[in-house]
Length: 360
Image 1 (cartoon, rainbow, N blue to C red):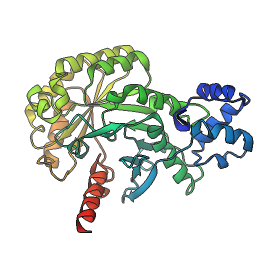
Image 2 (image 1 turned 120 degrees about the horizontal axis):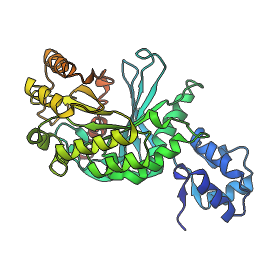
Image 3 (image 1 turned 90 degrees about the vertical axis):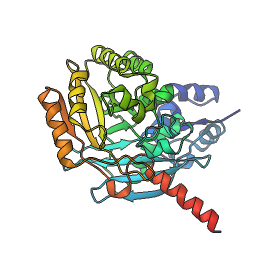
């Protein structure tokens, strides 16, 4: 019988496991709290569970944390973690501290949902490396739990307040797993992260946007838009060839109508998509919608010809969107000095490993 990952189990699942293995039901809540709140690494750490029960549980469950193989800290406090998974694959996770920039302390974790990414956006380091596999529920929750475990050693009061599914991969191509991970991270006796403080970012998987509106009206939606023209977006975001702008915008309207929440549209600006025409088309595209535009200067990525525009060009773009009565902001850049954009650190490590093998 294959063992189950503790970090992927809901309380109800633990109850069933306890009953099946002749263990009292109340143990289920204890196990859940040890795993999802305290992020324990070993059965021996579960002090209020008897040795006999731990042994029985260890026959059907395993506690496995992703291994942190590299941690970089930016001058702005952003931390980037490179995790090694059980099968040797690696993923990236970013912790962003907004303590000095907002009215309340906010520790946001940006998690990955896939090893690599099948979408292949032209400016993304993750997409350049191709797609390996989907992450499991335990591998997604494990990113948050391991960061909490590590940071609490430095600050006992540390807690994650927000989670954004904006790391490596397309979350909606791993939909069911991501939704279960959200449920686990939201659990009151776990991390207790509010549903409204979790956001899924998508390149535009239209059916799943509609499904999210039905399944969970609290979780936020961000769309990697990057252009208001199909011809340009086809090149920047290949998902557009399958779900063009008219279908994407219609799905976003369905989401907003069902949830009452606005959609964040991300615009990673480069020299090609930061023109006055693009800004005016964007205003026309989003007119009348519950929408917020988040302008992001495109990240410098080795191997990509996409370059970021001048600051003046971004300000011009912002003013045009504002004049169209659409909420807009320029994202505060975090962690640029440590390659905090998706895929960059993993890309660098794999280059180092390749060079090491070829030099030996």
